[in-house]
Image (cartoon, rainbow, N blue to C red; front, top):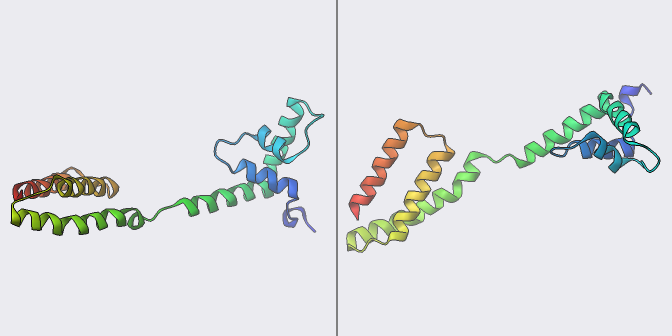
Length: 143
């Protein structure tokens, strides 16, 4: 079996998994995967460096990192959904209180903070932010 098709050993896989972690150091990953009791720092460093030059291991490290990044990635809509729920819940309360003349500061605060967070999340530029602030002013004028 050619070397490039040969699967990683359990120790090589363990080394790759350690190296895929944030701020991983080669020597620490090597120590976690291999028995280093009789090795000095330079020996560990050389052995770890040799493993890092193995294209199969480098490829596996990248695969693990890519999978972790994909698992951690939020869709913007997933992050924004709770804020839209706050707005959906707060606006009717705010409108009712405006009609009754008894505006509650909690509803105003919930709306204002949700609008600000949504602006930040969606990268609203200055002009759009000014329009959003005008919307907050309109909300303030209701109360």
